[in-house]
Amino acid sequence: MIYGLGATRSSLKPDHLLQTPDTFVRIPLPGASGVEFTVHTGTHIGGCRPGFVQMTAEFQKGGTLAPAQELAQRFLYVLDGALDFEAGDVAKELAPGSFAYVPADTPHRMIAREASRVALFEKFYEPPVWGPGNSETAAPHVIVGEESQIQAEALGGDEGLLVRRLMTDGPTWDFAVNTMTYAPGAALSQVEIHVMEHGLLMLEGGGIYRLGDSWYPVTAGDFIWMAPYCPQWFGALGKTPAKYLIYKDWYRHPLGAYPAGA
Picture 1 (tube, one colour):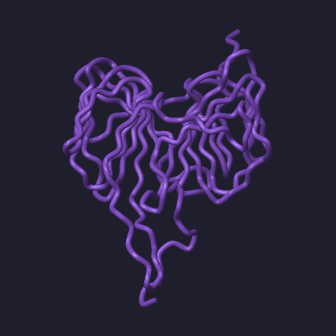
Picture 2: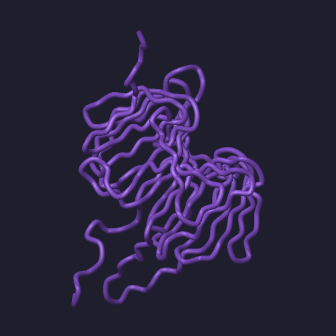
Picture 3: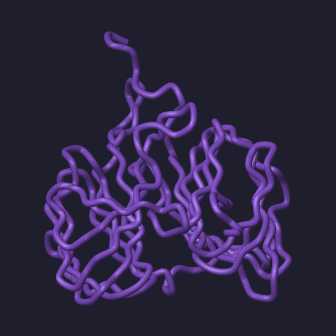
């Protein structure tokens, strides 16, 4: 008898997805060379249309990304390996924990020095909407950084919950990407229900995630998508910290742009 046939922790519900590495399917995408992609969020998930794409890109040595689609921003976080990154006047070798943001329609290139893995986010840019008499916001610019150089903030004053904000904050930017590190046994102080959509990749450790009315054991390598208003809560389990990389849409009014003629 074969035990475990057809078994997985992965689960898809109308307002959330848990996607575990045993269910990842790798595909090529046009224009990329020497790179395979696991697409975590696409045009439809459950009953929703995600507002962003999140992928894990796996590079062979010498692999390169294709340019982003027109009007699409890109954010990347290096999981493993080493890559050369160039965008305008910025040129940097990216190592694990390095990250970069590229505004829409900005020429850039990335070449893997060795086999590498990158968490990749893409989103069509939404300019901020200003009422009459308000000034425009500066255009987004290239950002390159190291997570280890970002000052950690205690979430709600709890030193067991440390946030590092990788994106610059402010109305110029329409999404945020953070890392969140939980001390063993630490947990969110509340079940969160909010308008933001999330994409989350577990980086280290594990714990229990509540998504909607379901409870899931999660561990490093798992991906989670959360729709707007999906009830969500996490508590870390084990003797080592738990850490994840998390995306959310940010700093945009839910109404969006003004109606035509307003």
